[in-house]
Length: 235
Image (cartoon, rainbow, N blue to C red; front, side, top):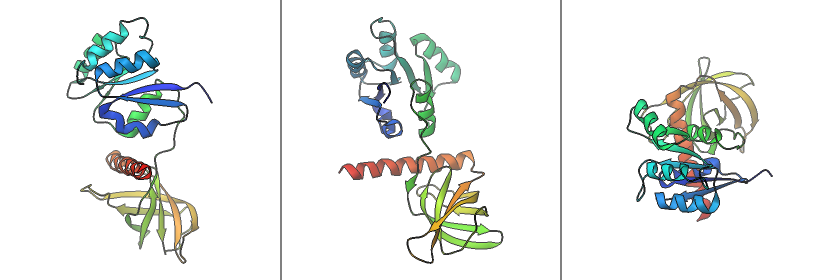
């Protein structure tokens, strides 16, 4: 195991903790600027995700305090910013000495990519969760009905009675709960296994043209479901 790396997440992004949970990463959460300082002075963390607005000392004050203290300034600070023009954000970041920023709202993958710029964590495959969504698919002009077994932004495992071959191109249409628009995406069959009950088969479908808006919808759904499943396991 490599060196343990330490991160502080402020309260408004603590829900993102599962996306960076690793055996060699310790994640602390803080609800105020004073708590951020207390944790960092005690633990000497590697990265702080710092909100501009917090109870007590705000993020700008905390950042200035840390970066002006030789004993604790050796830490990367990323400010969580929103509601400002880019030029105003960059002026703010420069004035307080922060290392970078991320603009709210952001997706789990954007969050992880930002964290990975400052600490060494391995790339994790796109989050995939077990879920049953109704899928209307087409193979050429032939219609196919099925349900997802799992889904991520890269593809899905589809269960259906229809027999299909490896490499077959399919068009899938499905809805994500609480999202007003149906998602339509093309894909290729890259995996084929038996279903739990004959004559059902399961097909791994790799998406080939998922647009950015649909990707964000799926990613937010997967992240929400993952958090709920984690909560259910610890009850």
